[in-house]
Amino acid sequence: MVLVAAAPAFSVVIPTYNRADLVGRAIESALSQSLPASEVIVVDDGSTDRTAQVLAAFGDRIRVVQQSNRGCSAARNHGVATSQGEWIAFLDSDDSWAPDHLESMAAAIEATQGGADFYFADARFEDGAGQSDSQASSLWSKSGFRIDGATRLEADATAWVLAQRQPMKLQCSVFRRRLYEEVGGLDEALRTREDTHFFLKAGIGRSMCAVASGGVAIGVEDDPANRLTLAYPPEQRVYLEATLRLYRDVLAHGPRDAAVAMAYRRELAHRLAVARLGLAKLDLAEGRVASAIRGIAAAAWASPRTLVARLARRLLPRR
Image (cartoon, rainbow, N blue to C red):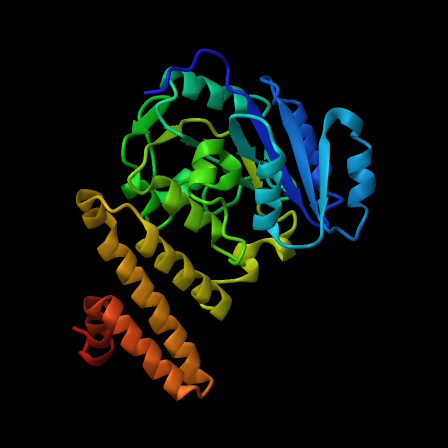
């Protein structure tokens, strides 16, 4: 167990792309923390709007990193590579933190004596006017997740990251640099679901700590055109192909410990098969019969039970 002798040093990384009207709010929330970050890094991912002028107005209170447009994963990886702190805290440019967010996370790290490399809090979903999303007030409530007390430290977070809806988001989490580097950061080839992939790598067979703090506001309607969850819905090919890539990678490079493997390999193989069947359905609709057959065969290889269950659901009469 790692003993924490001083307040953690947080490096805040904010990726942004063409959000001149929103990024200032995110930066202000990072700069206004009751526990100041050691640095605030904004990675401008090739913006073509007024983002450069907005960033320049903050002067030396932030460090701006410029790159050509390569996507949010590349921007986050670039920001981490140039940062100095032991702990990394991501914040999206259309979201914001409560003033005590970093202080709450630091308190959790200290209370658990740094027993995890990854800490995550709850989040509030709000529209552009700061009103809560009508479906549910927070990420944890939508995920069916709760903890008793201020923190919950899990030595093996496999069950958490394998939940049907993961109870963590990047902008609600802090993690040690060494963890990020050890799992390879974010996969820049993924156009969506890169966060799901990272959480699986960071949580399967590893420790995590949940923190009872709703210090992050997710702006669900501030910039819907640039939200990947809306741009790539689950039934689209981009989403399904990303799902294939991330589950294949986790299955290929996940922990080799037999006890840990039993807890996740069958579930991931099932999800892999479901994604393959989803792609096969799209292929059939597009007249790509040979590709569909190959996809169905691959699904059967990955998880025969999943294929049989899906066929039975379609062929057997409902009672």
